[in-house]
Image 1 (cartoon, rainbow, N blue to C red):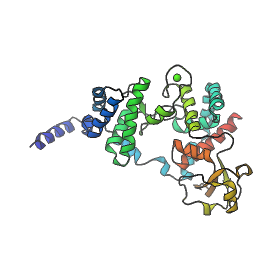
Image 2: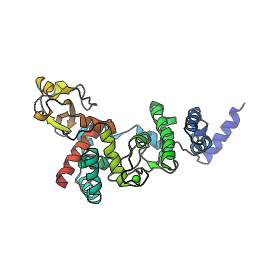
Image 3: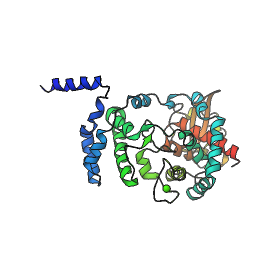
Length: 325
Ligand SMILES: [Ca+2]
């Protein structure tokens, strides 16, 4: 018999243009269980539930998840990022933060131009850090996007832990539709695990502090195995047979010498004993093939798309040229 009053409430809420599902996030069993786990880690359970009762379901977040840019082919993806304006913006960010970038390269072993390329692709040097409340984005995906619910519920939990650890208010943090925050667009679990206090002021602030953001992007790549002693990608030919599927994820497994013995032409001599993979892309002039090193794979730890990793690679090369690095 409770069905009828509930419907009446829903109808009246609709009449006031209040989102229906939002009010209930705190009551969801997954959220109750999350609040228990967070309470065991020292957070105030009631405060967690109060914050969750303020979380809103955003259809725009679900719509954005269903049409990511990475579904494009390389010939259409590349022009989004490879523009001279972005290289100029990199140069101006470099002028402001040269000593920090050089310190990151020296201390963490990741090239200045690669750090610049990542921050450029992610947020145009802080210009587009995202305008979604991270709380709403992660609650929507964690609780109303079954395909990735487990992952994003984990990120929602990390958002609360981050709030406690860095003394931030979860309700105020802004980010992308996927809950990625700051200059380098770190999701909460990456923020917790890889952010560094690069200016030594006692806080890891990736949202308003470009120095911490630069150090943290470099640290993320360093911790995933960046190696300064070799490059990222080099064009090859006669490589089609080594590509399982065009524009698919890579997995460095054959050495340069092994690939050469299978007929691949153009692998740099210095890479003959390095583990490599061959990436095939649909470029503006047709199919193109690239030998890629573990550094390329490391960029895909930041974003799984090989198109993303190639955009970062090529932007880093243009930036290095522009800056004379
Ligand atoms: Ca700091």
